[in-house]
Length: 85
Image (tube, rainbow, N blue to C red; front, side, top):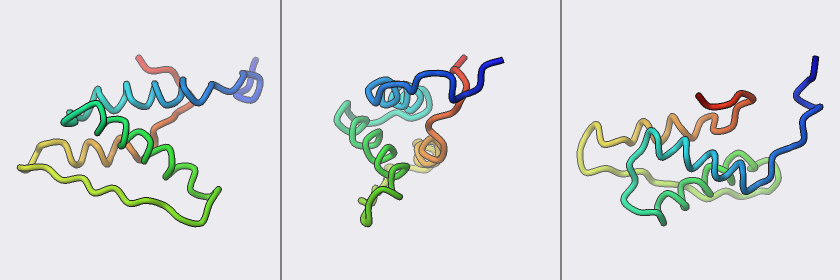
């Protein structure tokens, strides 16, 4: 039986690409630049213990049900130990 530590760590690019794909499944963002900003913000937030300061991300939508909650929920645990379906 192999443990999680027996597998090589994924590259940073692979993690960010997987995060962008997961985010795009649940959230419609206005541009590719906005998707990049959200992905980098999520990565920075999860790396927060490495430094003393963090940026804030304001998520606004023109109407209720436009995806604010989905974006927030997607940022809570972006990387898991299992493969996506």
